[in-house]
Image (cartoon, rainbow, N blue to C red; front, side, top):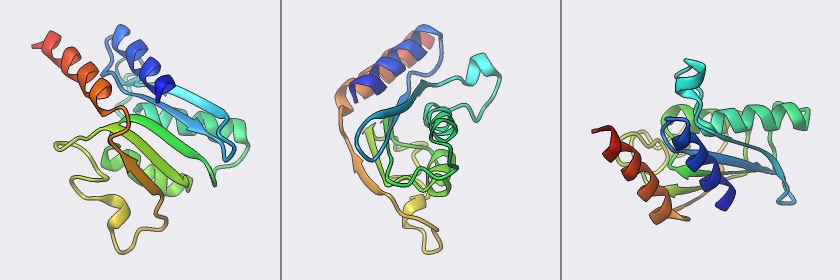
Length: 143
């Protein structure tokens, strides 16, 4: 989570929503890491976890991230959760819960849908306080 938080801080320094993600291989080695890139890339889909999973798949040489773990500072949104299904990640570890836009523990709960193709293990609330504090600070400054 420390690497994901560092990516979130770097994203905030670039005036992006402070979310960071890291993809670990089955042995725990870092495959890729990223922070949000929505504003810089003019790309609404450039969420940290999508950017990290895309890069990890490229480096891994496979469209499937079987056995891999995605560590992200915020509960994945429905778009990112659906992508995790298609990337076939083994587990998702996230920091802050997102009652407004989350797609794992809140909202559509993508992994719990009966027709979900793949259900990764989920661990939420890891580094929750620090992750939430970054987001609160970012949005407080914008208001």
